[in-house]
Image (tube, rainbow, N blue to C red):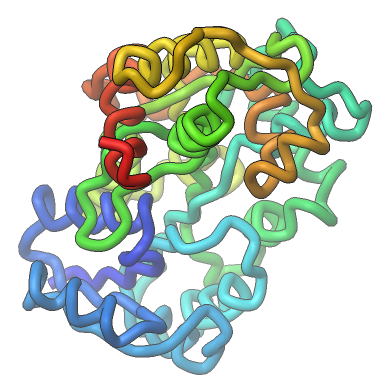
Length: 340
């Protein structure tokens, strides 16, 4: 029986990944590490056969031992926690392991935004589109160039040796849609934009609003995780799927933030919560004051061309579009705020 170690099961992405994995690979043996007993109890209620261990990402000895025992590690808890990544690496590289391990790691599309941040260009448009096959060298160079800010990506791409695990990095852009996990079903960028719009009584955009991110439904992100784990369960060692080539962009569409802000305020107006569909320009500093890293999340560019998952995993996105999802996101946020 394949043993899968999952980190992040209480989170938005990790919870949805757990749901999708259990639906597609119910016969695997799952272990989840959680730092909160109350959250652990909720997961155990929904998934009584998942083995829960209480610990956190700083519990290096625990993570190393669990990784050593696992056939597959799915780290969906953090894009930047290097201590947990180092512990997982030690476990997966342990020479006593009977076979090579597989490791699927969450990253993020903000790596594509670093040039904008460096130039202090917030709210400005860009025609540059990154791709994960044709532009693989460009992405690896970008990670290397900004290795101090992308410590996890750099570490995983730098793994060497005979006992090196087979790794994959997933770089989601804007993720939208209600998660299917047992605890956190809320994403960040669009719900936060909806919250700010309702609380300010008007729409907001960073600068000119010309910045553009790709986007993807949460269920389609989880589908890539599932397909990679399925490959791992099969013992797949295809060099086009893993390690230096194992870079995955799931973005399926690109929309300017100006357009997103307009759609959000229109949906808020449809609920009778604002009188006007006006959208106000704000600075990246003000965006940061409204939500953590708001200037980056709403004011930079991160456009993706998805190639590898389609070509080598047979991945086909099926979630509804961001434009279709926005009214549901706005309604959920209004209910959360007690406005509906």
